[in-house]
Image (cartoon, rainbow, N blue to C red; front, side, top):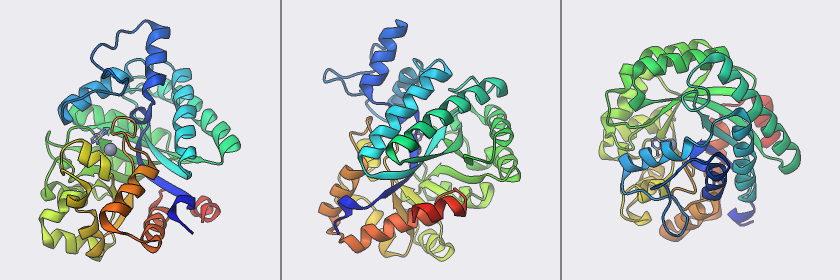
Length: 322
Ligand code: ADE
Ligand code: ZN
C-alpha cells in the first residue's frame, strides 16, 4: 500500500494559517477590509521572512471578526485537510484572535467552531481537536489570560494548550505560569521551540514548561546531547519540513534534519503548519520527503503511528482512529 492511501494525522496546524487565500480575500471583500500587501500577484500570501510572515498572518486574520466567520473557516480548513487523506487533526485556536481573550466571547467562538467541526466530521470523516494557543510576542500577561480561557474550556474537544509566535522574544520560562495553569486544568502541552530559537529553547521548553510535545524542535540537531535526551525520553516533535524551508531555516529538503533526528531515534511526526502560506499540504510534505530521503512505506507508516500515539485526544477517540 502506498503512503498516498494512508489515513493521515496532523498535530501541528494553525487554524488561521490554514485559511485558503481565496477564503480570506472573499471575507475581506464582504467586509470592505483593505488587505493591501497581504497577497502576491498570483493570489498567494506574500511575505519576505519570518517577522514579515507574522505581520501578514495577523493582517489576513483581521478579516475573521465573528464566530460565524470561524465556523466558515473551520469548514474550509477541514475540507482542505480531508482532501489530503487527513482523518484527525489538532489545530491551534487563539483567544487573541477569537474575541480578544474575553471568556464569554471565546465560548461563542468555540461553540461555532465545534458545530462546524461536527458537520465536517459527519460529511467528510475528519475529526478536529483544539489546542488553545497563546502568542509569544504578545507577552506573558496576555498568555495568562489565554491560559485562563483555556482552563475554563478544557475537556471535551479542547485537549491542549500551546504557544506560537516569535520564539526570539523572551524565554520559554517567562510563560511558566500559563503552562502550569493549563496543565492543572488537565490540558496536554506543546510549545514552538527549536524553530527560530536554538537547541537551548527546546531544553527550556522541556525543563521550564514541562511540555508533552515540541512544535518543530528541529534545531535540537545542533546539540547531540539534546538529541539523545529527546530519543531517550520519547519526546515527540511536530516537524513541519516545508514550513522550515519556506521560512529559510534550511535551503532544501535534503538539508533538513528530520532524517537525522529520525535515524537518531527521535519520535518525529510530519505536519503542515500554515499550508497555504508555505504552498504545502500533507501530500506535498510526504512527496518531498520520499524524494529527498528515499523513505519507504514502512517509514511513513511509523510516522503516522507516532502521530496517532502522541495525539492529545482521549484513548476512545484514538482507538476509533487506529
Ligand atoms: N504562527 C503561525 N505559524 C507559526 C510558526 N511557523 N512559528 C511560530 N508561530 C507561528
Ligand atoms: Zn506552527
